[in-house]
Amino acid sequence: MDNSQENPQAQKVIITACDHNNQLAMLLEIQQLQFIAIELNLYLDTHPDDQQALMSYNSIVPQLKQSIASYEQLYGPLFHFGLSTSQLTWQWINSPWPWDM
Amino acid sequence: MWIYQKNLEYPVKVCGPNPKLAKVIITQYGGPDGELSASLRYLNQRYSMPTDKARGLLTDIGTEEMGHMEIVATIFYKLTRGVSPQQMEAAGLGGHYAQHNHALFWNDANGVPWIASYVQATGDPITDLTEDMDAEQKARSAYEHLIQLSDDPLVTDVLRFLREREIVHFQRFGETLNDVQGFMNSKKFF
Ligand SMILES: [Fe+2]
Image (cartoon, rainbow over all chains, first blue to last red; front, side, top):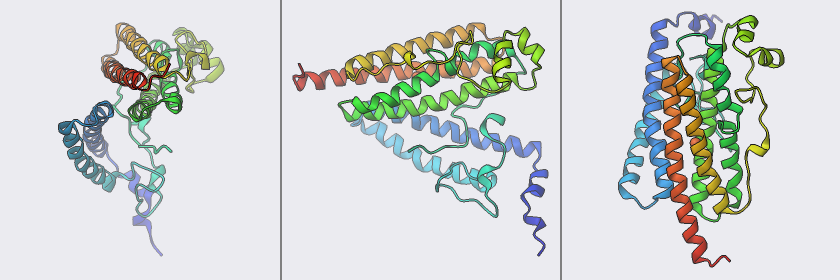
């Protein structure tokens, strides 16, 4: 059975610098949305009855989920332990790791 | 339980190798006011907190500090990548190289290893939250000193982000301290 087209090593070779820039841009969108979520989260910890902050937090959640889903479609799982799926091979361990990006 | 998310909280870029800057920044990894101290202190103090607000806040800030430890580690890693032993030695990292090569280790800027007595847990929530506010100010000061020492604008940008986070954490701990004080008074604790 010829499965060379599904070979992750072969896929790796065709990743270009442009791809890497796109990956960083998509990650940046996640980082920006999540930063808003972190800020609102800490604020809500000490102001749990603030309705406006609660609405803002709740509105970020689907946006962040959408950005993560789009990223994972192209670059593999952002989460381990059952929160993201891998395609064809166990993509979780693929480089680059965060300190090499 | 913790889940790893395979990205940094804030992107880290550096202009190039810079072991001199790495040598001082390592203190925010394993120095007294660094991110290891912060994350362990907060996560460990949760068990003796009397209110849900305090338990929640310590969980969330403790978790964010682990993310900051990863950011500081990444700065050190990138600033020392490909640096020769001679360059490490010339930058004052000869001792680090002898013991750890290019690996990360929880040292302060003078190479003193991390010790648990940098943090405290008295079981008194007022005392512990006051320590937490104090710790955030010390971390802010440390980041300001590092910003003064930094000759890499990309690293300075990350240090500014981390400094801002300490200010926000201080604010949230202050609100929690007030809340816990009110709770203790209402319970006529003494
Ligand atoms: Fe902090």
